[in-house]
Length: 249
Image (tube, rainbow, N blue to C red; front, side, top):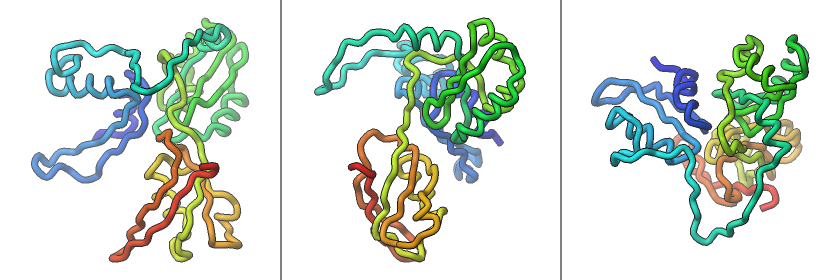
């Protein structure tokens, strides 16, 4: 059976992979396994669909799919910008470390700082939930680090960055209101967080509650609209409505 790591390396060659879900069940009609992969750009998804249908890269209609396309969104304000010379130089001597699961950034940083034995210094900066930008003293050191055993043990994949590298999630606190006391547990907080992203942690007052009025949870959110909505929780044959509100919304 194919693993998440194998799919991550395959689809990660074309840019950021949001999430991978490998089903334990099989298709009823073909008795074959299947998985879902969420990608950064719709264009990349179309390219992989075209490969599946036609056997070669394309947009499914005989045309080539560009790696990056400037898109003007209707009603959006447009601003002329410049390249940051400082950060461009940083990227030239950096690699991207990627993981299938959310990165425990502090742990990764401590391992790299404590166990790095190669010449020069190493720096580590998070770029969202699944990526770290690992920077070296020079471009030569960067090239030598591509096969470094320590980096390969910490990350699922080490690669050169792509253009317009940016974080594709935002870390937010949400408040869960009207949650019944007998549903107050980390497993349910994790399930609720999946509606918008990945569960990170709950605050101390939620983990060891002195009050059951509001639960506060931190998550990595994959949507840019603020969270402010009612949701339904199903347990056995009952449905309970609770309200979830992003702090500051």
